[in-house]
Length: 170
Image (cartoon, rainbow, N blue to C red; front, top):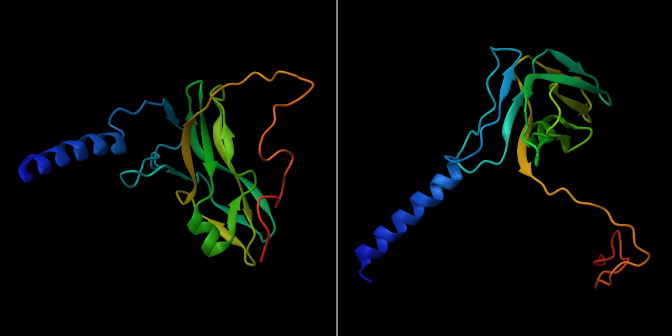
């Protein structure tokens, strides 16, 4: 194989990879914007997993307090998928603000407004303005399972080892 052929093959592979990364073939999810002036969630960069969700209201969260904050969005997540609502690392690192039930799960049958339960772990009141980014959403496929009651579980190398059982602190 010549160097030129090698470079052409690399470019073809990169284009295929980039198409997958940028989501050209991604599914479409129906969305209703209750607040038309808020940005529509979108990926900021190629390869990002999460889309930012924005606050639809002004809120102040006192230290140690949690509040339910609206996003102004309704969506029809397809069955077999879930929307996970996760904290934004910048809010956590800079202000101690996170999500109480992280990750929050939005199931395929839910049609109400997406809400985020934010908590202020910081020492100062935290002010959220309408259109501030408050969380991120990741859509994942999942498998439905059926639980089968049995008398004995199959063996495993871990057995009943739980919290802290995989290693010792030096």
